[in-house]
Length: 250
Image (cartoon, rainbow, N blue to C red; front, top):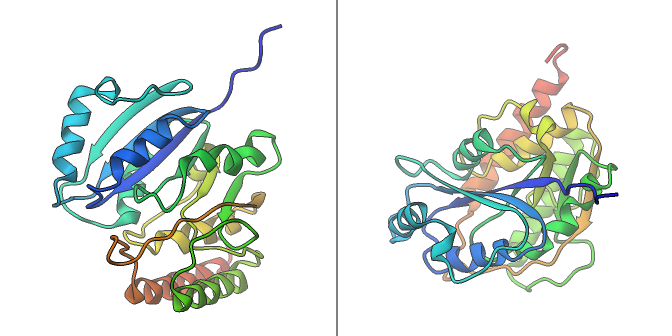
């Protein structure tokens, strides 16, 4: 009896000015053991990343010095100008055709070899949405204290608004059954996409799981982009989604 076919995972990778890391991230992603549809979305890069991705789009995976593990396809998309992570994700989501869709940053803070662990509850039929949490017992780089405080604060506000008990709402690693993602109406263009995705998963009353992940954070000198303005926007989005949830029929 033939083994059941593995699900295809659409990995949406927003890329903005990541010339130092995007190629290594892609190589790690290609060697991770699952069947994948890789969707790279350049968000108007100005550091040479866009030109490198244009070359990759023309040459294909064969131009890389790495052999992909599992069935693999590649799509490279380009925003006309920088619009933000959320806008890049929305474009990538619209092209995703896999059974499962997951977000992967191009900055090496998250190791693509962890993706099989993140999607496991979906593959096993237990979950519809999975968050990879940086705060439940795995290896992580020790960095900014006030970022951790802000993350806890935003996660707490989000939990109060959604009724979920997440430990890491702001995590990059969010995986969805594609059918669930298609039921969401997303509008955020920057990092507000994180609480928006969380709130909409809660509104749909789907099965949400968390799994522990390792986290290899970077400094601002190393290219970190999120800032205090994004935290303020997250508060606004949490409040907006909470008000929407409170209205009957929405």
